Length: 345
Image (cartoon, rainbow, N blue to C red; front, side, top):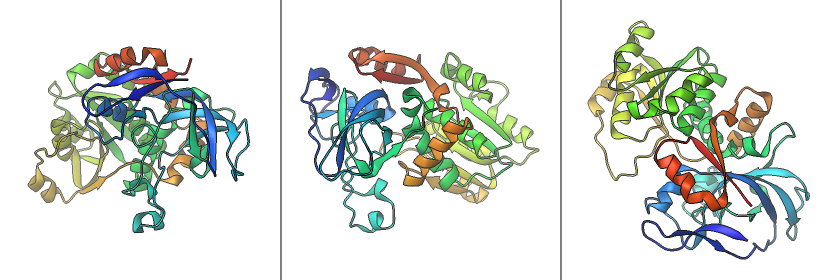
């Protein structure tokens, strides 16, 4: 079968090559991939900016159908439509695993960077990490469950959005738009999405299509002043930082009200960045860092998507063949695309 493989360490070294089909072991299932989204992590691995263990097949935002059960696998049956948490090889014994936080176990090796992933025809997964998808959720929509589960975990479970919150989302990429939709589904009274002039071509257009107000950094009206005006001089109850840029992260402190919350989602890819520490301290705001997903966030996301409360498929902009992977990443890096799905051929 053909697969997109990161062949060795260093920037680049990604190619489409023939690989053997996976062989399932005890408690595992073999899944025929129906769609797999390109994540920022995949792009970071391409550029050697994220931990990975080559050679490895990229891709972890998948949906698919079970085609084979390994020895002892009994929770699912052939033909089940599934998505899967990327928390493979968590040790199960450390304090994090034993308190239900397998997603940040130091032994974790997720598909797409730690073990072979889903930019191919088949992958194997431990059945304990799978979730069924209902019939009214398409394979394409289901391929967006993984990134949406991140925003559900971050915004609903950790930042604990409350009904009536005024929310600002910094960074209108796929995760930013999913975070905005999650905030709306969680009861926000108003969601404002902040982007840059470069975002005007695609991302902010999509934000407005989905129904959000938008503001542009560096333009008039000044976004921080506009948020202050919109909130009667108070500031946002919750700021969700999805840009991962130094400027975006610093601006979150300008947007948030005193005693408000900043939900940090975006990663910078840098060892350190400047941060207005004293300004945040004088606002006595809570800063909540986030990484990956919880078990419960997957079920919440699937239920919200199936009910229509979280229309996660709206962030899909392109559907391309696996053989077009390099063109797909070029579209993402040029910000001409939002969420790109790769479809096995």
